[in-house]
Image (cartoon, rainbow over all chains, first blue to last red; front, side):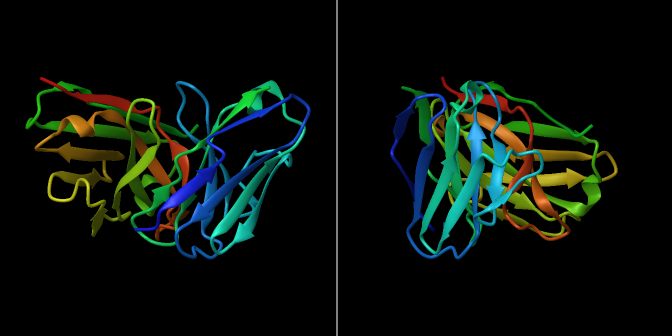
Length: 107
Length: 122
């Protein structure tokens, strides 16, 4: 099983600034990496797949990068609706596995 | 409008059984692999099962293999998860989830239901 880790666990950023979230896989997942956003009481929402492709309707402020075992989600010009928990997920191998999440909160 | 609605959650005693359902509308259910993903209270996400678009095969996480069975009825656009031998650690919100690709799962999920809560407790 591929183990996903995320850092930091909690990230405090001021509105209007940029947030950078990290995700690491225990072995290479090539570009088979997705990011999800989850707000309290809601289901996760797909943001990014294939490391860097934005899902339908996702604004350009969300961008993904990386390859192999190291990945990054960058969110620019943070607005109130962006503060949430973000999960990375590998889909290179079953079982598909998620990272533990990064909580993005207002500084 | 795409809709995925889970039902069947509730409180069950350890060792008991529960059957979850997932009613789908707004997309061609018959051509998509489907999954169940769960989230324990205050915890992260765990992928559980995948069923092929035609019901020909299922795949399970080790944590539920042999206890959970996923099935589908394409004539009724409905997905099922039969959960047996339930344990307290199975307590979670269970999400019915659509694979993003037609016919062959890519393994990431573009449509999620709101989830149904299962609590395993005596």
